[in-house]
Image: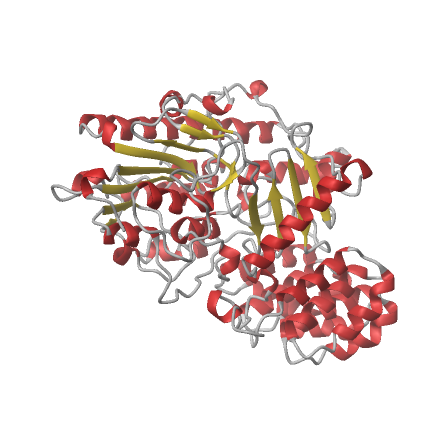
Length: 635
């Protein structure tokens, strides 16, 4: 039961959009962060805090519900709206039921069909604890959007100009979009440390310098809120939590399961508690349970994170682990799972037929990505910088104590075999424990907590065994995958097709099984089977099948997956199907349109990293209609 109102702390939760811990208190001296550093002096500072997903909406789903997004697909896929079961309680609803006045300024982007006006007392660009009625505690969330990825985009680009215009329209009290004033970095470019995985170019250094300037602006925002709290005489009565929805925005950070995409600031100043540093990995999934626990409110049964404070909190000396997941990111498919220990990061890439870095239209608005690709086209990358453009290794293991940039893959090294085996086991146990929906296709009727847990509906353990077998890329397993391609369960058939795809072009002995899969009534089985056949035999039927699945008569996710497959095949063989690709390129669906336009550029032979693939008009259609940018500006 909730404790008495007099014992409940007020709660101020400050979220920096896309903001890594580039603060003085975390050892970064380039941004000026006196307010955040002062807050850290009276807080518990979590040195190794990691988000559940490296992009906004899946991560924000977990912050709202306390549930890992992959437990309730499609919440784990970028820009999706998962259905909300009747039993699913959000943390603001729990706080309101306990007598708290709850405000949200203003970001939502929850990947859930939830009504912000129903779960908050106020969710707006001007929401503030000062609007509360007399008496009773408050929970006030403030989101700072000027640290969003788009803050580093070229100020003269159409996208940056459109976002700045919308920010001006919202007015000075709104903090959701980047400032109308473009970022002009004051950090000297030669002071920037360029990670080993990136080429040292002026554009990349400028992106880093710009973002340090955005972090400085975030600190000023934090300072204003803390001053207002002090002016109201509430500092000693208010728990202050500061974090981000995910890691940073420079190349190979946001959207990727490395430390720079997952490491978030997390500090919690609790009245009457001494400051301390917490060295063990923790997950942002624990934030809702932690706040509810500290307020003396019952934690809903579905919340999965362990509280970081209170009687049940672990000790900072106890070993712990943080898990994160990546699914579809915008128009590109990439299924990756990772676990972080205090020293190591371990990843399993369940799409090893795709590069780590795939062209993404929105991200390419940043000069850093364009510069990296330009350097690649010019042949100027080192092996450490080139490897991310090549097919992903099935397994990755990094020693963060020795290799902060995560470029030396230790997977398969005998000296680390015990570490690798332990982390693999723990990750597998976690995938099964959360009933990971990520192995289901996007149009599956089994997506979601309840549907995927119906007895016998989703054979995750069988699917995981097949997927892990596929990552071994052992040609002796061809009969196993060929047999599974005739299984009665379509999810099993889909992962059998992936196993054969990962063995292509050496999958010749299974070519007949792949041909027999082309008429399968389930498109999510046919797409990987057709791509596997195209890579193995090159026969026209495989290309024609993918082109048919890309036609407008199919659902958008089937079309998008088919367009992705065609993008990575022989483009001379794809060119006869240009009409289908034009249909995709001209669609109003942002992700399908972006994928189609990129492939069309490639077919025409006039693609450059500076090609404008992203549709500004499509991106701001909702804004023009007055709907706001929650679902379209939060990539």
